[in-house]
Amino acid sequence: MRLTSFVKLMSAGPLFFVSSWVLMLFAHVVAHNVGIHPFGYITSMVVTIGLWLTLAPAIAAVAGRGRRWHRG
Image (cartoon, rainbow, N blue to C red; front, side, top):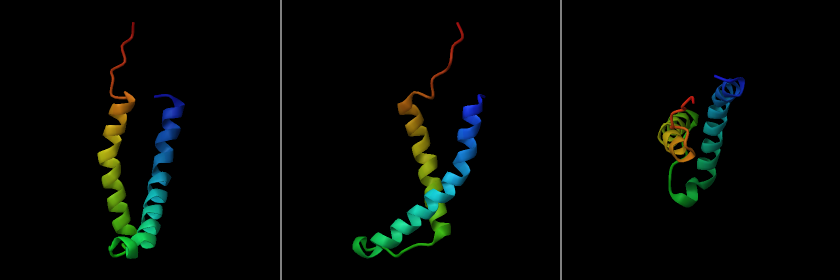
């Protein structure tokens, strides 16, 4: 694993918490217009991890990260 991969992995932790916080703020802003009840930070964390777990494999597949590396 290269150093850039390690840095990307370490930045994913704080990015998760920031993403959850932004989702919570966004839900509070659009709650009245959309017709939902605003939800808290813990619910936002659950939704964010669900989105990450479902979207990450799809993004990796589209980006071609799932390919095997062949040494020639």
